[in-house]
Image 1 (cartoon, rainbow, N blue to C red):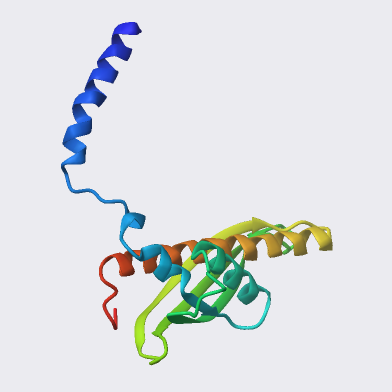
Image 2: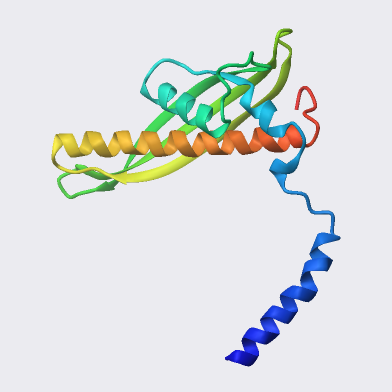
Length: 169
């Protein structure tokens, strides 16, 4: 056991210089990336899911409310719910929830479209016989889907900005 530990330490020590020379740079180490992400104003549609995704995006992008936005992101949402687990009495016990978020990023103040994209999140949830529990499960699914969609949009924007943020991408 002690020999294995020693071999592992030596291997890591030898691998460290090789990895440092490979040119790997973490995504968020790019100069100005965090400040560009924080300068995105999110405009979401009305409704519960629109509110949730806007809140999650503001958190994911570390929105700077004191600075003027450099970009405006317009969102359009599409929600679908499909019954999946059907009992013998034709009542669904499980649902599939699909949230698709279409976004368009416009540079301010010109309004020129800088980036377009969409993300699709699919998840399932159980539906209970009790009405309150069924509503709570559906709302939890909406929140989880909005959070995942925000995370994916944030990642797409970070990669786009790290690669130079070409217009029309």
